[in-house]
Length: 311
Image 1 (cartoon, rainbow, N blue to C red):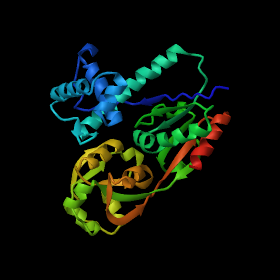
Image 2: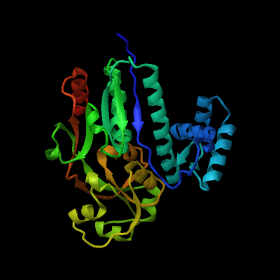
Image 3: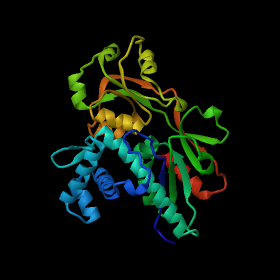
Image 4: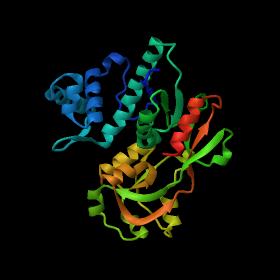
């Protein structure tokens, strides 16, 4: 039996004003976009250059040209690495979405007879922050099980997948559901932002720029709900609104404001000190993360569910 596994990740592209309108794909600077995507993954121009078999100077030239075209920086240049800016993070989501769709289509065309995979539908945030790291561990002990992710911030096509991961109320689901984890929600920010905006009580957040996620259909807790549950019902300063949790976290890393952090999704960021808690108070999440099963006839699906629920 082969011990190789296949992973196909489909990401729904994010529409943003920073993606240039074009009338033909020939106008897209493909070489620069490929260089940018590789540098973003490696967080390094040197790493991107090694992958693409070019010089770091060539990568830098391509990205500078792209930044000139988009009229803004895509990276923060640090001593030994680079970090995406908010604009860069938006562009990365869109590019990876397009590349992944092309890759998926080519794989399907090359081998219609490829072995079936367990397909999992999840949002961008759940995929990048929680599911993908766990699948890497899953494959170490289950190399014979192929898992394909369908990543989308809408519910479209989730019913065509074997499994789907949600944050919400399980009682409204017709599919068989299993609770994965509950969470606590904390106020997070970059270390520099925390130093510039010291707070000692929830009410102090009234003077702090806040990043708000606009995902009402997914029942994400808002800043107002979080503060009210902790005893503060006054005004808050909503400075930035985004519709993607990964972008919200990136904006917080860039020092644009404080963000609500679901601990199960942000553990790696807080453990590394990339984001820190502004206050000791936290709120028990009112809803659960759960997995819904749409395919009841696969032993491979059984194995994936069992592993995820125990890890």
